[in-house]
Length: 189
Image (cartoon, rainbow, N blue to C red; front, side, top):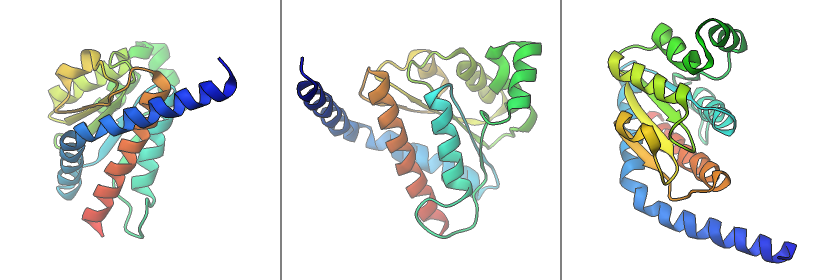
């Protein structure tokens, strides 16, 4: 296949996937509502994920803490992926699968929100964090691909975007994240 054909095929698949994302509007709205409700009640939103999903976690937390589109006060959000000392100490002492759940147990409180991001829906450290969140009374939101994996049973709100390819899932996750940030921001300006 030529480069042009590959590019055309990828663009076509991306457009088709994003058109099917409209089917998930109710879940996206429900996720925004959970996050807004938690923040208005004094709670915070925490994000976690691995690799590209870790980058998305940091990106979305920064949009809320800083500014997305409008000038406003900072909103309580953080990524559990950014403290290298905590990640490496917990990974070394308790195993990598516990890097998010242990942090969550230290800083999470009932009424907060945890957003777990995993293209497979089966990332062990994200799954364990969602399980810990449930035990702690923390609301759980999941961003996955078409197959939500183990996260399906652990999320109060699940947005399993209509894609199976990792690159498309990640593109859709950041779009969903930006939609969430926009809805949240509007609720606080």
